[in-house]
Image 1: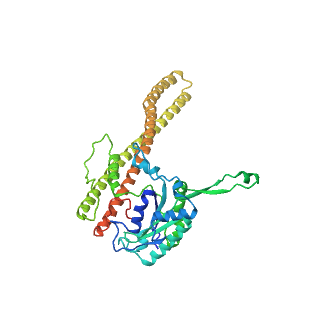
Image 2: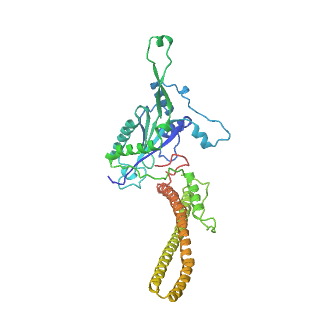
Image 3: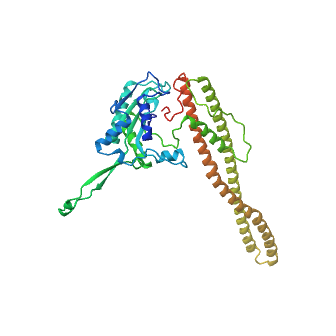
Amino acid sequence: MSSTNFVSLRMKNLKFTDLAAAHGHNTRTIDVPNARPDGHHERVFGDPALSLEELLMARLKVIGADFERMGVKKEVKGDDLSEQEIRRRLTTVVNEHVVSASPEFFRPGRAGEAGTYDQERLEQWVETVKAWADKEFGDNLLSIDLHCDETTPHAHVCVAPLVHSEKNLRRTKAEIAAGAAPRTAKIWKFHSSEIHDKEGLRLMQDRAAASFAHLGLHRGIPSKIRHETTAALMNIIHQAQGNIIPDNKEKLKSPSVDNEFEPSILNVGKTREWISKAKKIVKYLRAALKKETARADENRNLYEEKAQAAQYYQEKYLLLREAQVAVFDQCGNDPVAAKALLEDLARRIDAAHKKGISEGHDSRDDEISSLRRWQENDSSLARDVSEKLVKAEQRIEQLEGFIRGRGRDIPAPTNELKR
């Protein structure tokens, strides 16, 4: 197996109101535009007759937890709150982990043939997913749904983020008099943020990579690139365009696309046109970024030259000081000659100091501050824009892959994009 094959793992928090839609998507009981009707999908763990909500309630019943008394926030009211803030305040009741691998792993030598896979490799991978999930989540594992009806096989692993604490129960007077030890009870709660903080997620990625290592799969390379929806593509491109063209420069003309248009299997022709224009925008932004980076490099070289000039003037000043001492040594017995030479040298030293030393130190100050400004602003900006353009190019490449598949796999603008 190729050393370039990686494990893919990302997590999504599901609120109580998300459970029905997630169950419908995972079991294909609702329409999923980017799934092939004749493709294979199945629940490989968990009762297929139960919904995700029912599986969650069954787990709570086993541990003796009362859902209605767990303080679950199903809704948040507040006209002054944004939709994002309202969602943040809702209780996460299920963590959905989407697990996959590089296309080359499932179909060696045929990575571009969307929807195909080697059956033996798939079966080995599915067994590994089940073993990893059981070890990682234990009894809180609710379901694993396998999807082979999209571009690359993947699994949706749903888990209840449950934690508990021990609480002492009040003793009766009789128990206190008898010296009976306090009785305890387990208090259960949903606490996704406690289980999956930043460090916890990183360690989970490490453990997943170790679990899949025997298949030749490796941990993904850490990156700031995040999973993006189709609707976010133009925002990324526009942000990049706004960043790399300075405010004090005339903005260049660039191609534009219809921001409201979403790729659709019903309009492959317009989707091709949309992709073509989006590629032109990225090409234009790449050129503009290259130009601005070259300008920053040119400024940096100029500042370095000023620093060298400052060093030159400093060395020249020191040489003149040495000459002054030498003249005194040579003409020490002739006060008149020494005085004339020293006065001449004094004038030259003053001139050199005012013109060279001062300019040199000023140049050095300019160089230091300008280089710092370049490093903090221009270079970080270049990295930021490059990351945004990489995401845009990845999404465009993905859309082109859908087009090559005769348009049947072009996704609707949902959060469930192709892996």
